[in-house]
Length: 412
Ligand SMILES: O=C(O)CCC(=O)C(=O)O
Ligand SMILES: [Fe+2]
Image 1 (cartoon, rainbow, N blue to C red):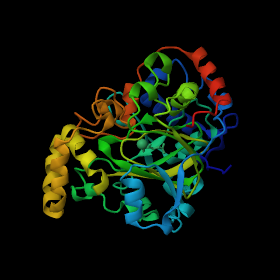
Image 2 (image 1 turned 90 degrees about the vertical axis):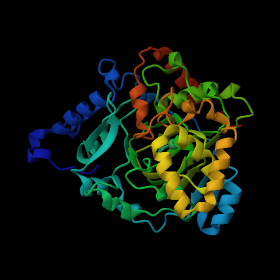
Image 3 (image 1 turned 45 degrees about the horizontal axis):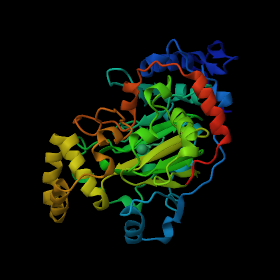
C-alpha cells in the first residue's frame, strides 16, 4: 500500500493501529456525520459486512460487444432503440485515464482537491479531500462506505483537466442536452470512485436519460432489471430495509432474497464489469451497482435521438423552466426533432412513468424525483436525503445475507 505522506509531516500524526493519518480520521468522521447522520449512534460497521458480505457467484448474462467493430447505426438500431443493456469493449483503449486514474495517481495529482461524497440533510454537498478519502478507501470496514460521486469536476479549475483523460465514445456524441447552456443543463457527467461495498442503490436514471459507465480501475457488479418491473418488486419496503435503505448492499441482499420467486416476465441481467469495459444502461432500466474492490469510473447520462421521446415529456414535467430553454435551442439547432418532441407529449408515457416519479433515478426520492425539481436533480445523492428510517432488521439482514451467499439463481 502506498505511503500517503504525512499530513502535517509529523509522524505522530500517523496512527499505527488504523494505519491512517489522524486528520484523515477526523475529516472522514465529519463527512460521515453530515452525509448520514442517522448512523451516528447506530454505527457504520454494525452489520459486519466487511467480513460477512459475499456476492454470490455470478451468471453473467449481459450481451458483450466490441465497440470498435460496430458503427453508430448498428448500435442504435440493435441496442439503443430496443433498449438492450450491453457491455462494450474497445472504446476506451486510447484514454489517458487508464494510465492516470489509478487511485495512487489520482491521490498524487488531486491530493488537496475536494470531491463530493454525499449530501447533507439540507441538500448541500458533503465534500472531502482526496488525500483523506484515499486513506478511507483503503482502510475502512464500513457496511456501506461513503462513495465519491462528483458531477462538477469538469467545471472546477483544479479538476477540469480530468476531462482530457477520456472522450465521449462515438455512440453517444449526439447528446441533445448539449444544445442547452452548460449552466442550465442537468448534471450529466460524474467521476465515481469508492471502495468495496460502496455502490449505487437500485434506481432508474433521471429524466428518461440513458447512460454509459466506463470502468477504469477495479471491478463492479451490476444487476439490471427491465423498465416495466414494478417498483414494489425491485425495491425493499421500509420494514425490509433497515438502516441502509438506499444502499447498494441492501438492494443486493433484497434481490437475492427475491431470486427464487422472481417473475419470469422481468428477466434480470447480471454482469461483472472489468476495467476498460463500458456498461450501457438504456433509458428506463432499473439498476443496482456494487463495487467489488476500489473502483474508479466515469459515467455520463444523455438524451439521444433514440430516447428523446422519453426524455422530453419527463423534462417538461420535471424541469419546466429548463424545458422551455432547451426547446428553443433544439428548435433553432435541430428543428427536425421538434416533431418527435411534440408527438411524445401526446403519447402515453413509458412503462414506469406513472410511477416514474418513483422510478426515476438515483435521485430516488419516492415522492418525485424527476418531476417537480427544477433546480438541480443530482443523479445519485438525493438518495441520501431520504435516509431517515430507523427500523432495525439486522436479524432479517443476516438471514438475507446467508441466503444471498447461497443463492445464485437470480438470473432468468
Ligand atoms: O458506478 C456506479 O456506482 C453506478 C452509477 C449509476 O448507476 C449512475 O450513475 O446512475
Ligand atoms: Fe444509474
